[in-house]
Image 1 (tube, rainbow, N blue to C red):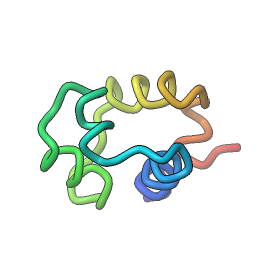
Image 2: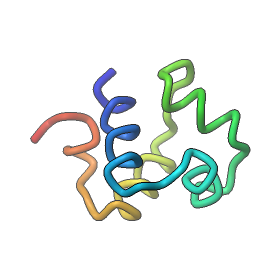
Image 3: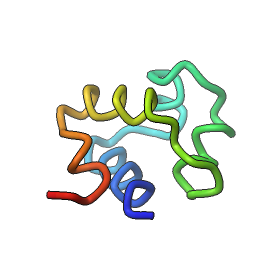
Image 4: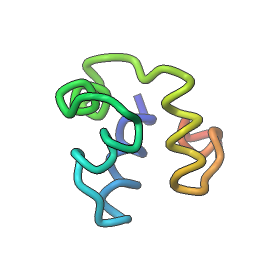
Length: 65
């Protein structure tokens, strides 16, 4: 569950909109919004892409650090 909070916090800390991040992930805004709200599981490929984008580790995203 922590991954969704971390994803949202990272986006807000970088002053990005949900629409901008959805574009980075090449997906529709509504799909990204569901990931961020925890309504859908974030796929591994998307978590990797977000970790690379924000320059953090996957461990950080899943609250293992």
